Image (cartoon, rainbow, N blue to C red; front, side, top):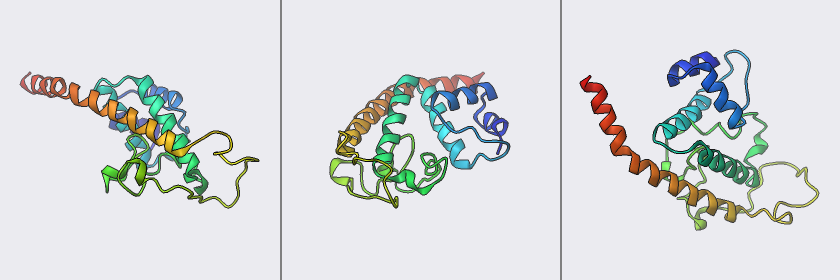
Length: 171
């Protein structure tokens, strides 16, 4: 699909969609190169904004999730949209990160993360991520804390959204 197709599906202008791409550092693709997973990611962002979640908080979680996936070497598949490719998946939601929707393989808890996975052939770094002070469990904990706050805030806003939907249907 094209940028225009996604904008129409999201009921947003192409300019708004382009702004999301820029602020979330999403790859801009030419023509009809956008996959359904890309649209699913944008839809999740739009819906969370409708629920009143601050974009700054969403961007913080987005960067944390991408960093976690990088530490787990999910980025080694070679896809330019590696961090979006799971966004359309629906199976096992309890095992998925909120924004990238990546399945970590087990329920999201400290004990659920399998460390030491490396899908890349070689590391381009002189030092390991752990040697540079990056810790997957620490980042996972930050992701889970932020995700819990976002979900709690969304749950608080839900009655207002439902009331607004009833008002729209009555009018």
